[in-house]
Length: 135
Image 1 (cartoon, rainbow, N blue to C red):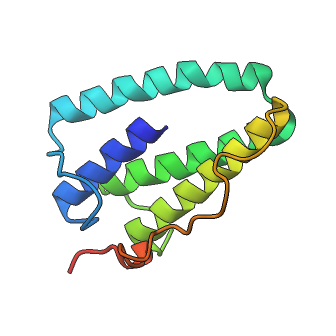
Image 2 (image 1 turned 45 degrees about the vertical axis):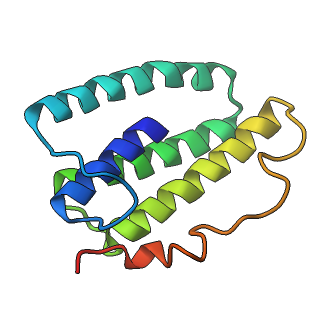
């Protein structure tokens, strides 16, 4: 998930859809072929979640997939009905990922949380990602 989201972000930066957060990745046919192969691998690895995850975790995984695919569509400049742009879509992805991780940890009986305290995203020095649109 993170690898694909990062690649989509880099493509979005190269296209001027997102203006910060990653080094540009030119959207060549070779890059899109690599992304497609990474998606196949992500899908295969997700089978473990489907096998071991409870219903809530699997539902969160579906929502996380939708957020990831939204990033892909935006990076590919495919039409979407969402109006929030890249910044909102990326924020939604991060929230969906966090929710999935929380449910997966609970479903596996892993105690505690990923981090000891709440750390805001984006960090104050970065500004508001929902404003991450071309200037």
